[in-house]
View (cartoon, rainbow, N blue to C red):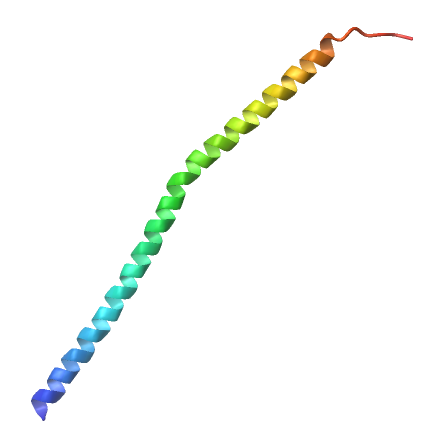
Amino acid sequence: MGQIFIKDNVSIQLSAISYQLSAISHQLSAISYQLSAISYQPSAISYQLSAISYQLSAISHQLSAISRRPRVFG
């Protein structure tokens, strides 16, 4: 009976270790996805800043066009 108990105990411990390793694997996978998302953020920020730059340029051109219009005083 002693050997069976030891084998069962070892089996339970190995099963527990297996679950812990599985949990660690899932955590590392989640971290991997987060790091992947972070790596795309600078690119997204760059595109947003570029879009803002174009908008400001368009506003600048509009203001320039308005300033060139002849002024009519009544």
